[in-house]
Length: 149
Image 1: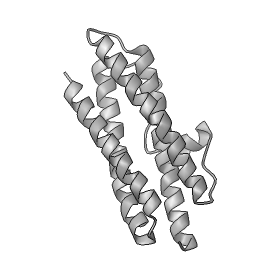
Image 2 (image 1 turned 90 degrees about the vertical axis):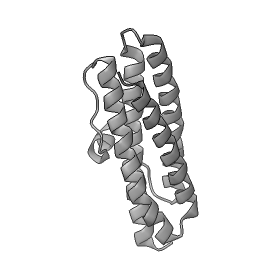
Image 3 (image 1 turned 120 degrees about the vertical axis):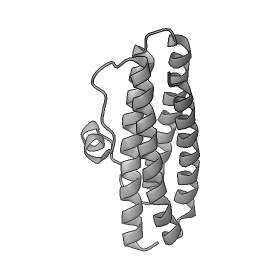
């Protein structure tokens, strides 16, 4: 790959990493702090989601490293790079679902924008990961949408 393509891909992956980490932390927060009549099902669903996101963070960072760039790895960098706002409060359970749905939709849009860059660069490894991540975020969005009151 040419150096500009690698730069474009790793910058896009760095934003994806930051977005994923912020959503991971937010989902874990919600898992810990959810209350209400749907506590058990939401507590369990949020746990499944944050565990999947934890694995994704590692996969994305390792892809950045495979492309010989350094992965961002601080909260300050994540907050600067991310398109997603961190959670500083404990919203209602229904608002938690809405917030996460919005976040996953932001990531889906970002993934859609990265795929053509990977295609143009002939970066099949990144493209494969982006397609898989898109499928996961689309399924998660569906589950969240279906859980709203």
